[in-house]
Length: 81
Image 1 (cartoon, rainbow, N blue to C red):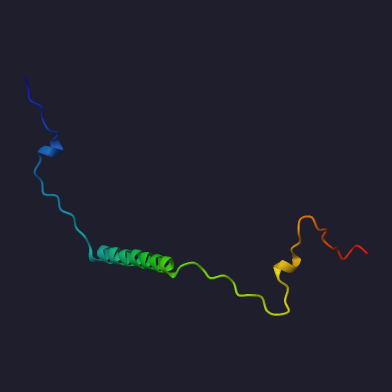
Image 2: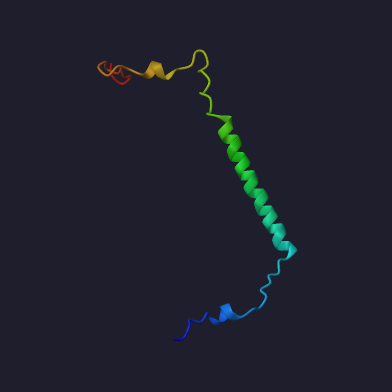
């Protein structure tokens, strides 16, 4: 009975080398700095907390409460006498 054989590419003993240029490493370094900056900005936004409520209206100005009416009360209109 014949024993199973490995494929040809597994039986060869060639050394596999990869050439990396310095420019490729520089691009990788810039990419890592960009990712670090994005993560840091995200952490700072989370630590900053919620946005505070808007400031109160100036004196003499209208507030939304003045325009609000009860559901059962009629809303006055300037077009009706």
